[in-house]
Amino acid sequence: MREPPSIRAVVGRALVTSSVVMLLLAGLYGTGVFPVDPAARGLVIVLLAIVAGVDLLIAFWLLRRR
Image (tube, rainbow, N blue to C red; front, top):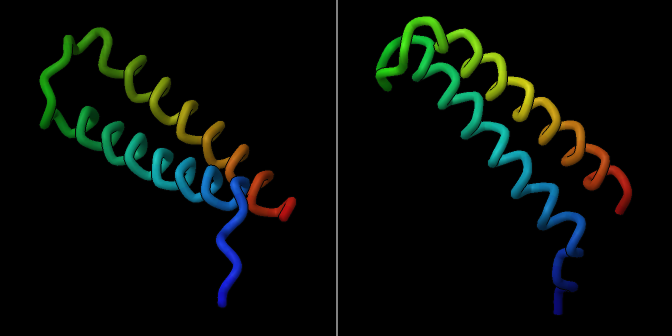
């Protein structure tokens, strides 16, 4: 019988998925699919990209430390 995945692996995969969703949302905000004030658009995109990057860093750290 196979061993269940570790908690670190599950959380790491969830963070990778979260990062992809954040980057997708940043792209959708950037292209204007979701309406946002034009003055705030750049800030929203940058913040989503930063959060996605932090999620990826934490995910890779968790996935590497099995």
